[in-house]
Length: 110
Image 1 (tube, rainbow, N blue to C red):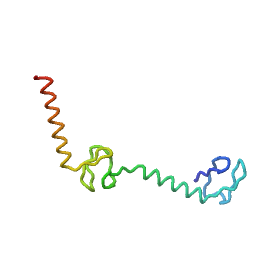
Image 2: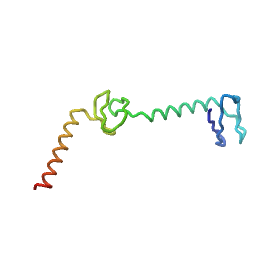
Image 3: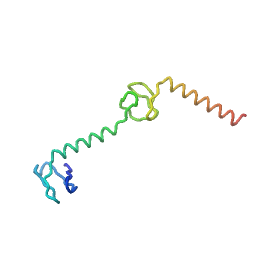
Image 4: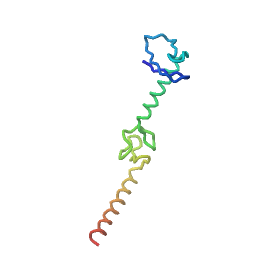
């Protein structure tokens, strides 16, 4: 089944394999082209499928999620729109840990 929209009046018509290939709009009588509607339907489905995939911002490899995930292609850590190599990830984690321990020291012991 294929949903066809008339270019003139916007009426939607459903077409299936049992109907003839030359159909007209039930509202205005304009001849509807099944082939262009089928092509538009395929392009629409391809855009939906492409939107489902998430890609690594560095190497464009397909990944399951974009936060706290290591890319299987480039082996970088993915944080949203950023991809960080393993060395920088360790350095950033150490700095954040040091700042957290320092803050706790100054809050509770000082």
